[in-house]
Length: 112
Image (cartoon, rainbow, N blue to C red; front, side, top):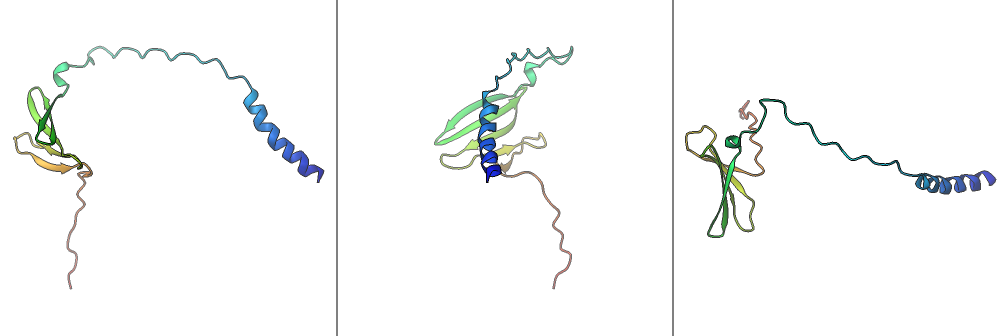
């Protein structure tokens, strides 16, 4: 019985002792180093985003160097979908936001 009481007191005292210890002095994080030479960001490679309201839909057009490569359409109350120019020929294909792009092979092995 005495060992049970000692164990209970120890279980209560250990968390209190752990909280009462002083916290170490925190040091501020140093600034990150500059990028290596030749790795500066080219503003021409940054995508330009144009947001347009067409009726109730919100359309975001993404361009790099003036060339349209992706359109995001967000209908009101619906999930957004994307129109992507995959080959760069100006023909857009639709991709839903939950589409991962992975297409497993589905061959017919045997039919009855």
